[in-house]
Length: 380
Image (cartoon, rainbow, N blue to C red):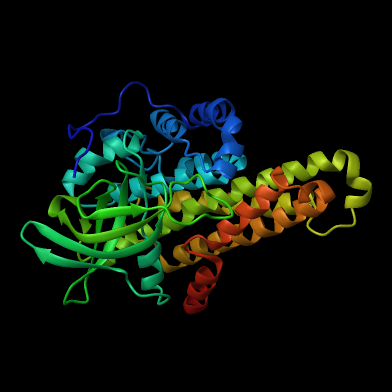
């Protein structure tokens, strides 16, 4: 596979403080993202320049050591970054999560080539990346069968199979992939690249939201992947390292979306409170619940820290519950927003309609709400 540069990269200049990073992100969102949100949503425009830009200012390197181009501050500022972006555009907030998740994989691998040569390019947004772990996450939860088979060969593995949808990828993008090793009960996790030989990307469906996320069906036909690109094999313990951060960072999407729904309801109430006061899920009630979820998620992020160690079963259960709550709160807030806005919300292309469509994604993206509830039931 080809990468843009394989020289080790050190962090350059003075790393932004959390406050400065959030300020820079807000400025970038206002100038480079907000004007294009309608195009991203309705036309499926992929905001590639914005995604590279926020990588340069530090949106992807929070859990990454400064040696590899990050800040080393852990998951908390990563969640805050995803939250701030999702307030304006969930598609882009989701892609920020995809990229941060791949950065998290690389931060937690024992593979020195990936950590020293590839992670710095991902942490700084030079290379964009996705996750590719929807199928294995569901497989390990007993929901569906693994879709990729890896056959050992000299120097690595040959991959065959199809992943239905992988987001934030393209010809030069990286993404995680998991496969069952042929003839065994073991699995591997690796980093694939969009332009690798034997991989075909197909964009053959249209979604009701999240159209601008560069989501492709990935067909692996005798695709060779070398040992240099293996995150872990067998990967059972490795998956347990990355799972809490992978799930918790998604909460940022729900936090941002819900906050914007509340803000829009408050704006509407300036002229319609006299009638909206009779609705359920009023903005002040939702704000209290959102703040409780926000504080809980921030606390959990500090507990997880930088990964590379197992968390307790209780911490993992709290992470999964926080993720489920983010789904539930997003759905309630977007529905309440529609009712608060009234007839104008039913106009095709309104911000209210977009936020409703996006909220279903928070509840359906892996791990989906039903997946989370299944896991919580098994942990009880």
